[in-house]
Image (cartoon, rainbow, N blue to C red; front, side, top):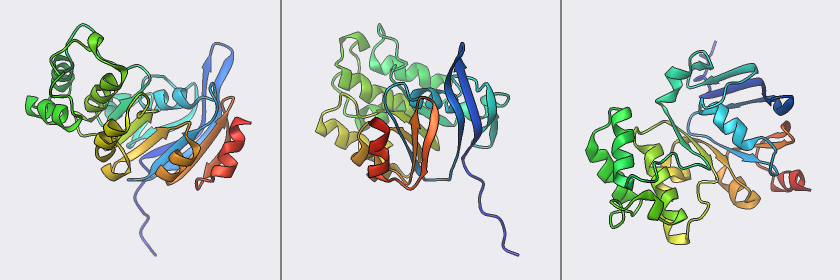
Amino acid sequence: MSEPGPAPLIEVDGLERRYGERAALSGVSFQLGERQTLGLFGPNGAGKSTLLRVLATLLRPHAGAVRVLGASLPDESWKARGKVGYVGHEPLLYRELSGRENLVFHARLHRVAEARVDELIEAVGMQRRARDPVRELSRGMVQRLSAARALLHDPPLLLLDEPYSGLDPAARELLDPLIGKPSGRTRVLVSHDVEGGAAESDLALGLRAGKQQHFGKPDPAALRGLYQ
């Protein structure tokens, strides 16, 4: 008898999440293995960001089973939280602090050496502006710092909500080895770019109005139908 393969890094079965009476997610189920990328597709309001926030332990599921890196959510959220890197719509940076001060703060939370901060500042090309207050930085610069923050603790899982939004081609090229497919990390990637997102993904999950419409190999034709 052959031995079972490794357990999936993410297992979701019948996930439901509500905002009051409105179901933001209903009956969502999928699995994602190590070093795979799951692309999340669907129109605005489909539930993509909500799903990412549930996986990041920022929102509690209301029903269904969710396991992230072997931890059952929400009861074992503390086990998963330190192993997940999250880049959302909000940068999770203090505007009055400099980029470097923000990264040092987060590094201390994760008990990461300060040398890692300087390594990532260089990796995302922010050496010249690292000591400026975040409020003075462009959207693209803030996005680069958000990626650095998410990578400080070298997480095996990245949850990325439109991570290249606001970036010019040079910045995208800088971040690709860190958070893109070449990073070799397991990723859940929200994208409105169907063609580009499908090319980045091993699996695709299509949502519309909180309900699962597609799960499987990325099929750009089927995914484009979500937006019609």
